[in-house]
Image (cartoon, rainbow, N blue to C red; front, side, top):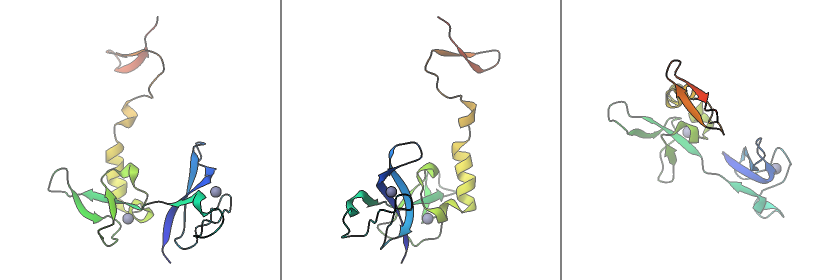
Length: 137
Ligand SMILES: [Zn+2]
Ligand SMILES: [Zn+2]
């Protein structure tokens, strides 16, 4: 049976937000963290929900702002297949393992390091160094 993504609402994610994601056999989703059985018909099956697999739709290469319209992992494109051009929203492990995904994710997220984390105090850009500085007062 194919593996699928699930979310256990009996557990929190690493940031403490309710809902911990895991991959399991589609027919028998058991949370690897708390061992709750999410198999249909079991007592607390409603605590574990199935997630959509989100594939990566790589850039077309010629047509601007378009994807290739096939999952990067090579999975067959069905009417129900969910794909996105946002690499940060992809949860398909096979897509994430492709070279095109790794390259385009790096490109997509490039520049993020040029900006420092938003501060909870007034900031301005120092024209001399192009760095953010705290505004006093
Ligand atoms: Zn759990
Ligand atoms: Zn995929």
